[in-house]
Amino acid sequence: MNAPEPNYLNAGDTVKSWLLTTDHKRIGILYLLTILCFFLVAAVAAAMMRLELLTPQGDLVMSATYNKLFTMHGVLMVWFFLIPSIPSVLGNFIIPLMIGARDVAFPKLNLLSWYLFIIGGAFVMHAIIIGGVDTGWTFYTPYSTAYSNTHVIEMAGGIFIAGFGSILTGLNFIVTIQKMRAPGLTWFRMPIFLWSMFSTSIILVLATPVLAITLALMAVERIWGVGIFNPKLGGDPILFQHLFWFYSHPAVYIMILPGMGVVSELITCFSRKKIFGYHFVAFSSVAIAIVGFVVWGHHMFVSSQSIYAGIVFSFLSFLVAIPSAIKVFNWTATLYRGSISLEAPMLYALGFLGLFVVGGLTGLFLAALSVDVHVHGTYFVVAHFHYIMVGGMVTAFMGGLHYWWPKITGRMYPEKPAQLAAIILFIGFNLTFFPQFVLGYLGMPRRVHDYAPEFQIYNVLSTAGASILAIAYLLPVIYFVWSLFYGRKAGANPWRATGLEWTTASPPPEHNFAVTPIVTEDAYNYPPLNEVGEHENA
Image (cartoon, rainbow, N blue to C red; front, top):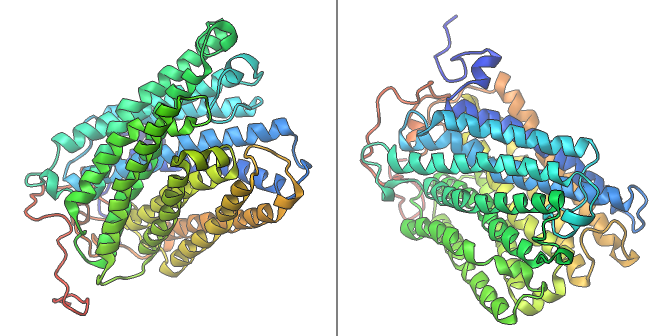
């Protein structure tokens, strides 16, 4: 029996070799396993909430427990799944391969970022185990600093620590993309995924310290009673909202920009065409990163903010939709007359398009002052947020995971179950969250465990959709694990895609490339299509 080809997976099989690795590919795998554990806990909290909301009466859990459930769900999903998912998993694994590098710029810092993430997650999980937190994932003051008797400091401390891991990751990616590209890989030959990750990294480095400072100030007020946010002590609770949303709205783009980069890769590959308007798509990522810093005030239209400031933030919120729309139009133009094949990654990409458009259009509702006053604090906001974050980011993450799975593992998954999972996700997601738009419009407030009986039918639909969604998440786990043992071996380029990552073996060797590649072509240089949409050289 022939010995297996040396690769990053068999370059050391002890626990120590994994826990002390500086290989960007192994660190990506460590992040994947870690975020899946946090996702599972957050999903259990979501399931408990949906079961509670099956009936109008609060008959499954008490109100205090319900408050802890949505706090746990929000904290784990936002900071320990959504934000690190594509950057820390796919970004870590793919970026050096995409640019023809042997590793990231700072391999030891890369490992440190994972350990900071783990330590922060341990603090959060300990806070949950010993009683939880009831403030909501936004930690609004003065409740979080003066009145809550739950473990606020420990949970906020976990987010604080994990934030430094995000900063190190962003710094690492900026330097890696800036300084370590292969000869010939100019800025305008880079795949769009790299543009998205570069823009995301800028947000991580500039915005995350603001969150750290905000949580530190909250801890100072809670522990020592310094009047920063509590009006009884001479503080200003609106200041907390300004600081928190100055980070947290750019954080939305930390989650969605990498997903947009993944979708650009999938649409070009499975329509066999160059992306339409490459420069516009690339610069729209930078525009989202920049404009995203000046729209935080639309979260505060009902928080006694100046009406003039509200008008400015409303205008800017409409403005940030333009680069997102550019991407959607250009993806659609790329699909036009393409030689489209509906493999599982492409189904996820098309699902992303549909769900993200709904999320983006409903964001315009919330950017309008008059409409936001009506639906603020209702399930309309919950539905909008989930259409962007889950319908967009998680769908893109699943698409990217399917796309690069052969490269990561060297094995192919079964195609039919993968296609089925993508379809089930699209159906289950819409059944879960579209009724919540109706609930919000009719006035059902979020974060309540009991509600008026006339809202029950929409909540029943939403809970039914959540159970379908659970199947869509469980099915890939089953066939991915199956593929590790029984999947057929993948070649270096099973999708016939462009890009340097597809020029090395699957799975890649420990140092990625035996010889540094030289780039001589633009990105997505697929063979031209003839008039009937087939390859000239097919």
